[in-house]
Length: 290
Image 1 (cartoon, rainbow, N blue to C red):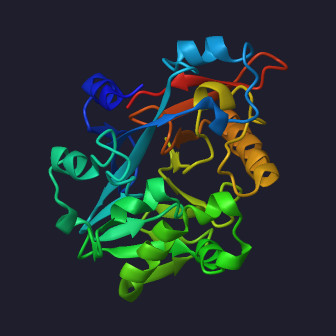
Image 2: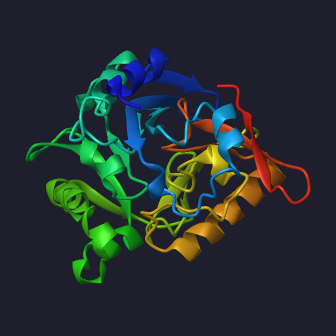
């Protein structure tokens, strides 16, 4: 797509509030857009999902996907969930500092960094050169995610490409790195959810009671197709069968309970509802009010 991904997707803004009950005020932040070839989605059957993609504003011959982060305003704390891709791949990405400014903040204001996982499009934005971009923030990463990246000999070729970003994050924030586990309330009103598959230690963060929201990391990369066809995975899923099972599980839960999904690659501002579709068709998305 480029031309700086059609001027950052016709500039729909870089910061948008999301309605959540509970102690946190949530703001979606746009880091930019990643231009992708359909080969990154090896299970997609052309001619089956094309109309779904078009209806969602996605051209399968000229694809781009959102790269989102999420800001949580809590009493006395300012929390960032994921940090984007930096501008290492060009100027269609790396807009997180601008998005923060649009929300009224600077990197120095962030007190806590919650990482869903340590792939580059979530962790590269944590650092600037050999320095941390968020000098006052504590970094939270799941125990399983740390173990995965601390054992490079077990990584396949695709995951090895991501290793430098994971290592840089863990090394540069080593003196303020906190290990988290699924099920714990990591911050007031924010609970860690296990979402393994895309990486073994991928987690999400759930908040809200009456209108709950799950920041679901990379359970979905192409919701226009994957909500209807959950078996269609992503090339960089570390464990594709487990990732597929997790996608089925989360989509079924959201369709059953009304839980909203926020995601790094759901079209900005990155929030959808999932509802049960006609029998045999799995799921369809219903655009959320944000």
